[in-house]
Length: 455
Ligand SMILES: Nc1ncnc2c1ncn2[C@@H]1O[C@H](COP(=O)(O)OP(=O)(O)OP(=O)(O)O)[C@@H](O)[C@H]1O
Ligand SMILES: O=P(O)(O)OC[C@H]1O[C@](O)(CO)[C@@H](O)[C@@H]1O
Ligand SMILES: [Mg+2]
Image (cartoon, rainbow, N blue to C red):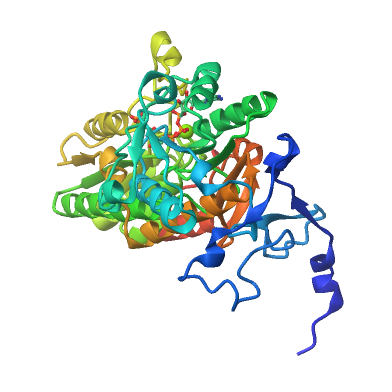
């Protein structure tokens, strides 16, 4: 079939490749050396011309031709390079986990240790315990493949994590004093912003230390990458809570099942859990303001649903409705150790508002709200099989990149391919739910919920 040229002309726009920082840019006299994978019996380096990736191997930022006039970007492809810039016996690698938990943290660490050890022959690998503060407040923990053997079967982070405690100069002093020359920083958006500061300071001091960020965000609030490891596992776990809420609601007269899911500034978990479940009547996310009373409001919608079906299931992201929950002045100021605003419990508030509404409007009718808050249950589990595989590829990507001398970068999947992205780009990129696109329309078509646009 013929293809009209005008439809595809955009495909031929120039592609700009996002340049990466490299140790040779600021450390003088660094020598390249052959990749030891050359002598690894498991890898067919000679039989496969394309085994090593070069500067011209790239991953496109957008693969759909969207007709937009903006330029097209690409990132360097993640994977082994022919030359490396570390003598493996001189490597002292540090691994740290910061921020909240996410399924797969232990797997990423396991694979970093095993990968460094077996792929490149690195023998000095350390865990920094308790997040960023651990660099300067505790002794690093030596790690080896035997020690981490079962880590992928466990939830949480065996190195422990924390919020706050980001003291740039103490952290970089500690990196220098422990002679770490590879730093693997696993964490969310805040952690990535911290990693940029660490990288900038390392560069300023001209230290021969490479830094890589490995994005972890159960909320999926980090941009550019396809999605975080652990996200799928969290969605799977959320199904149990939604199913329970559905059973409870269905078994009551005028029953409402209310489930609160994580999602501080983004509603991805609530949205994906809703689409996967199909038992959800209304999904509330931070990106969409909602209201309770009056025409087009939540109560009117639920009233209708209860009349039609006798029950309803409501999924709410923790960050939804924060602007309409009454707060005291001190609650307005409350922040966690990292400076993130502490949220009020939207689930507890909604449950109470729902009960008040029903008692006011239907005083003689039975009504039940069953509130389920599985918050930590969806993130404190070990990664499922798909996420475990993802964690492995992510760890290996990070190792190959850092051994090749790249620094100040993030390893992550873009359109299904692993790529290296400048750290500062990732630290800047948030990832709200796009409420104008097809996915949100799909949610609304599944739930038939109001758009909450006051007419
Ligand atoms: N702008 C920043 N500059 C330097 N460090 C930061 C910055 N923001 C956060 N951090 C540090 O990064 C670490 C983690 O931050 P935070 O608690 O916000 O979690 P996160 O990485 O965003 O993960 P998540 O939100 O997914 O749990 C903390 O130690 C915090 O002090
Ligand atoms: O109670 P913690 O550990 O601060 O974590 C809660 C926060 O962490 C996250 O899981 C990730 O940012 C958010 O969804 C949630 O607000
Ligand atoms: Mg965060």
